[in-house]
Amino acid sequence: MGLFDIFKRQKAEQQQAVPEPERREQEQQERQELSAGLEKTKEGIFGKLARAVAGRSKVDAEVLDSLEEVLISSDVGVDTTVRIIERIEQRVARDKYMSSSELNGILREEITALLQDAEKDGDSFGLDFKEGEPYVVMVVGVNGVGKTTTIGKLAAQLVKAGRKVYIGAADTFRAAAIDQLQVWADRAGATMIRQNMGSDPASVAFDTLKSAVANGADVVLIDTAGRLHNKVGLMNELSKIRNVMAKVIPSAPHEVMLVLDGSTGQNAFEQAKQFTQATQVTSLAITKLDGTAKGGVVIGISDQFSIPVRYIGIGEGIDQLRIFDRRQFVDALFGE
Image (cartoon, one colour):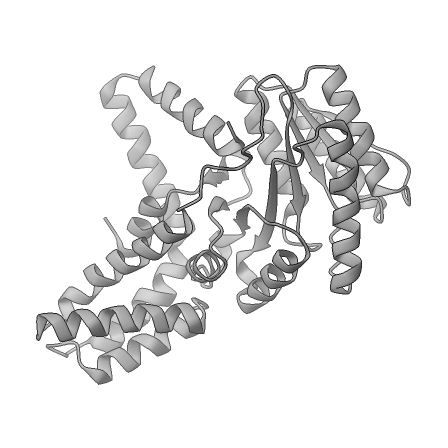
């Protein structure tokens, strides 16, 4: 069972304990919060689209050209945009006629399908994971994307779910990173293992897993350095950390989570490319979606790298790191 499964089960259990009217009210509130968090992206994509097709009765080549421009300018990405346009062209050719008013519904279906494709291997985080040993997550990403905050929020939610959490401060190149992580660990009620600034990151990871095993931890979150230095250096550093962890728990890490800043648009694509070449990334957390019109990167990155998005950040609060639900996400973008 991975982090995603823990959170899904916790949410299901919480919902079952709540009377039906209150549960519906909670679900409605969650949808409203998600919609508000994605408001800038919604306006960026579908506000432009509405203006592009205004006054047109059918989907023709000119409408498709406008749609292509809207999607690319909203950071969905060129390759993913081309796939969406090709799918719509096939449907237009098959159905012979499609009104512009149907376009939102078709887009909703196609985007959901793309996110579904990325989910195909979604829940098989770690095939060798054994109950009774810590579930280890190595968290990667460049400085400034919200990596430390994401770790802190995950830890807080896991502790709230009754899990014993250890955090390894393996980003030893910045004293501020270690201190910030300590603040989050204290706030979350998690145990943090740290060494002095400049220590070997692999040594911190090793000590964290040894302590976690000895003390019966459920989950270990390992922070790593956010330097996007040359690819060979990044690969060697992450490989060393992985190899050392495997000496303590042979199947570790069970998950490698890449944290990306959604507000950086195309830079997030480049970061995803660098990290997926340097190590095996199994899940994504995309942060800062509430302050940007570039939330289309969620669609493009998930599609292009075939990696499931597991969490999205839509605000500063601990509970605003949300489990990613592709249907809720698409509904929030298009309206219910």
